[in-house]
Length: 296
Image 1 (cartoon, rainbow, N blue to C red):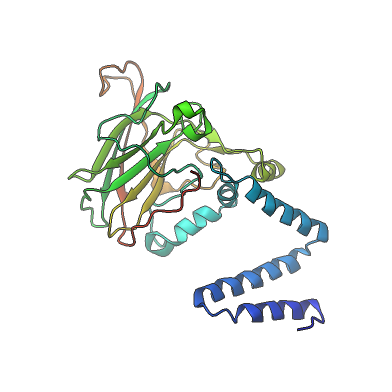
Image 2: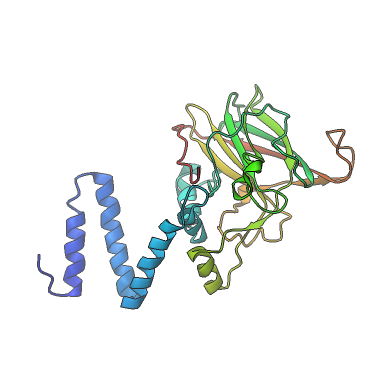
C-alpha cells in the first residue's frame, strides 16, 4: 500500500489490524490504532512530543526491575489500574466491589502464619494494630480455607523490599481462613507514603502540581478454588490524603474503620494507644488465578 495522505494512513492501519485472526486481539488492536490516531490528530502531536513520549515509554521499562515496577506505577497514576478493576468487578461496574489495585509491591511466597500471630518478622516500631478479616460469598456465607496474603508499609511508609535484606518478608504473611471465614493477626498501623518519584512518574506528578502520596492502607489477596481471586486494599479514613490518592485507588467500599483505642489491649505487652481493624470481604464466583507478581 502506498499512502497518499494522513486520512488514508489511518484507514490502511485499521484495515491491517482488522485482518488479525484472533477475535479479541483483533478487537483490541483495531480500537487501539483508531484511538491512537484520533489522539494524535486531535492534539496535533508534534514530532518533538512524539520523540519524548517514545523515550518516556522506554524509560518505564528501563526503570522496572525485580524490586520496582515503574510501569504499574504509571498505570496507577493515570487511573487506568483502578478503571480496569472497577470495570471487571462488581457486576461489570454496576455495584460496589471489594476488588482494588494490586500495587507494585506484592510478592509470592509470603511466610505461612497462624491466625492470631504477628506479621512482624523483626522488631518493628509503630502503633500496635490488631486486624480481623472475614471472607464470605455473595450470600454472606463464610468461606473457610481461603488462602490470604497480607502485606503493608511500615511506620515510615516503606515496604520491606525497599529496605535492607535483614527485613526480608517483614510485615507480610499468608493466612488460611477458619470455619467462620476469618483470619486475624497483629501488626502495626501502616503509614501513608509517597510513591517513588525518581523516574518518569515522579516527573509527571511534579509537572501536574500533584503530590505523590498514597493514604495509609493494608493489602489483602485472597484465593480459593471456585472464586475469583480477590485483590484488595483497605484504607484508613483518618489519613489526611484519603481524598487525594496519587494512584486513584480509594473507593467508598474500601474505607475501613481503623479504630483508635486507649483502653486495655488484646495483648499484655501493649500499653497506650492501639488500633483495631475489622473488615468483611465478599468474594465472587469465578476463576481462581494468581496475578503476575510485579516484583520478585
